[in-house]
Image (tube, rainbow, N blue to C red; front, top):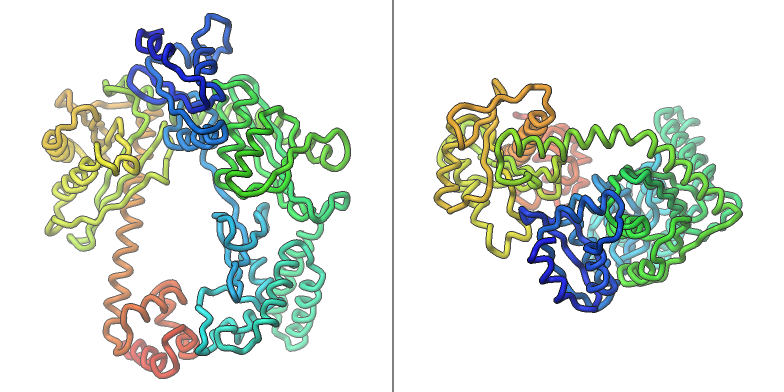
Length: 602
C-alpha cells in the first residue's frame, strides 16, 4: 500500500459513490460502486485472503479517487458510464456489444413504422428485438402491406401532397395525400400493433390471398415472394411457447464462471414467442460474482430495451437493479427465480448454453488475449514505450491528386478496435497532394483538443501510430514538439518491409512477422487506411453526384438530396424510369421528363 493510498483511506466518506483504482502510470484499472465508500474501499486493503484476480488488482493499485453520489442507484449508473469510458482491465466488460433492431410505431397523429436500434422512452411503441434469422425489414414490409401504415417521414399537412410509390404499391394509405381518414388510418395502426405483438392470423390470410392472385395471373416471382413471407410468419408462429402467456416479455439469463473467464447466455421471449438467444464470452472481473453479474446486466441494459421480467438463478442485488431500471425506463421490472414450469425449462436451456459456451470459448478468449492485451504489453517492451498503450490512435491520409483530402483517426483500446471513438478530418489548409502537410494539420488539430473541454470526446492516447516511414515520423514529431507533447509515444509503421520506426534510435525495429504485436500494428494501420478510403469515397461520390446533376435545370440541393434518398446512388438515378423519378417528392412529371431526357443524351 502506497503512502498516497494510506492517507486517502482516512478521508473516505460513509456515503454512496463510485471509486476508481489507478496503477503507477495513472491508468484506470478498476471501477466500482459502493453503498458506503469508506467500508467498501477499505476492504481491498485488509490483510485477509483474497481471490487471485482481486489480489492481482490490489497489487497494482498506486492511487485511487472517488465520486460521491446521491444514492447507490446513481452510483450504479455512474459506474457503468466509467466502465464504458475507461474499459478497466479488472472489470467485467461487455465487449463488441451489438444491439438488435426493433420496430417502432411512432407517437404521432399519423403513426409510422420505423426500424431502430435505439429505444427512447415515450416516443412510441416498440416491438422486438428481432434476432435469429428474422429480418425486421421483412416484418415491417408485411405490416405495411397488410395494414397500410406509412414507413416514410413525410409530414401530413392541411395541403394534400401527391401520393408516392408506396401508395401505388399498396403499402400505405397515403394520409399525406388525404386519401384515408384519420380514423381508418389509426385503425390500421392498431392492426399493425396487434400483428407486431404476435397476432399473425389475419396477416397470413391476406398474404395467402395475394399469393394466390399473383399465381393465377402467372406473376410467379411475386407469388414466390409472398410465399417466402408466409413461411417467415410460420417460423415466427412456431416459436410461440404454448405454456407461456402471450403478454409475457422476459429475458432468461444464465451466468457461468471458472474463476478466470465467464460466459453469459440469454434467451429472449416477447409476447410469449421465443425471439432467439445470444451468448457472451467475458474475462472475469475482480469483483465478487454477484457484483460481476450486476455490472454485466447494467452494461447490457444501458443499450437494450429492458423487458418486463428477468428470469435468473444467479444471485445479485435485485433491489438495486430494479431501482436502476425504474430510473432508466420509468417502469418496474420483475425478477423471477423459478423452481418449476416453463420458465424453469427456459432457464435450464440458458444455463446449458452458458456452460457449453464457456467450455468452447476459453481457448478463443485466450487467443484474443494474445492478439490484444498481451500484444499491447509486448509492444511496450519491444518499443520501450513510456507506458502500456491502452489507447492507440492511428492516422492515414486519402485523396486523389489532392482532391477531397481526408484523414482518418482509428482507435484501438486494449488492442481491440473501438469504433465509437473513430474520427474523420477534412483537410482544410493544405494545397495539392501533400500527405506530410496533411498529417501535420491533422495531428495539430487533434493535439489541440488535449487539456480542453473536448478531451472528453478525444481522450489522451498513450501511443500514436503513423502509416509511413522515417519521413512521416519526423514530420509528425515536429508537431509534437511544437505542441509540447512529451508524454505520448509516437511510432510509424512502413508498409513494404513492415518495419517500425521509433524516436529513440535511427534504425527501425524489426519484429518477427509472426509476432502478435506486429499483427496488432498491422491491424490498426490497415483499419486506418480502410476508414480513410471509405470517407474519401463518400465525399467523392457526393461531389460527382452534384456535378452530374448540376447540369439539369430545376435540380438544386434539396432535389438532389431527395433523389439520393430515394435511389441510393447516381447509377440508379441514371437508370430510373420517368414514372419512378416522378414519384420522388418534389420532382413531378415535367422535371422527371427533363431528368430522363438529360441522361439519355449523355
